[in-house]
Figure 1 (spheres, one colour):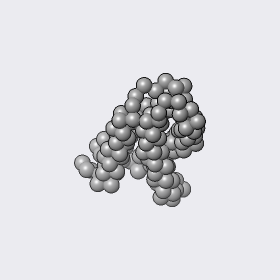
Figure 2 (tube, rainbow, N blue to C red):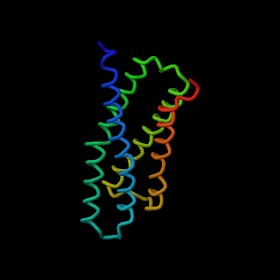
Figure 3 (cartoon, rainbow, N blue to C red):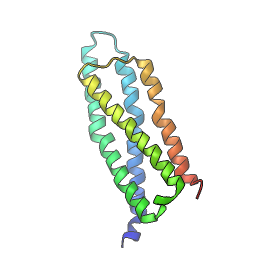
Length: 146
């Protein structure tokens, strides 16, 4: 029975990954614009705070949770959990999760008007999920060391 669910679980895992990555790429971009606001832009700042919070709470965090749950199930079900390529992928997904945590903390900092970083910092940070995603996709598709 569980074997017949494998392609469905894999499909929903990929859907969750796409949602997670879309949010991981968009949230730092919102920070770029938020950090670049001129002093006294209260209304615009409040709008960014709502957008950032909703993106984190409604899309990014649920998608990450589903990605992890289904990914771990797939690793267990497929028997790939011991494969070196999956262990490397796991390390990169852990790094992505750490980045998620950093972005979640930054949402809280912006919400409390505690952000001390400029828009250039967030332009650089915006590239980190992209680089991690490239490594993760290559490992998942190419499966080196298998």
